[in-house]
Length: 144
Image 1 (tube, rainbow, N blue to C red):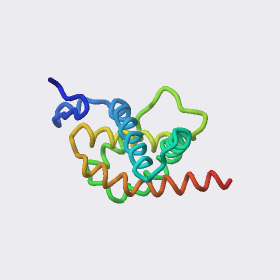
Image 2: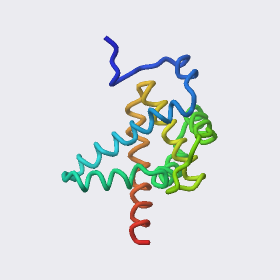
Image 3: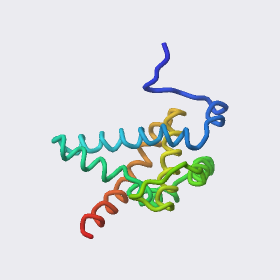
Image 4: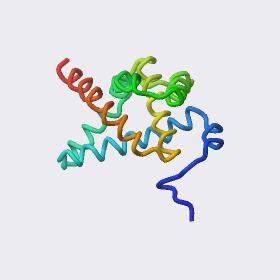
């Protein structure tokens, strides 16, 4: 039976995935990690969980986090990130700028790529650095 919760892909299969396909997977990985972090932090009401999740997974928060993890990326990770940033999605939400959306897509592509190759420790390492920057972005938006 195929394990769809932990799908492992070899390097050849990963190279055949488009950046937008990787971002599609990475979007859910990033949101799942954010939801897990929120519950682990003690946030338990459904309303608060949803509001906080939305604020931390939006393109602006991901873009802020992208700047925090960029210096940490290996050459191979930086290549995946760059390809994700340069991907051309069909539409951009009105709530974000094209630059924010490009960086968010890059983060998602990187997270999707790491997830599909089974690099869970690296995902957690990058998420731990990305999250405070996303929280700071969220806090600045609340004050504005």
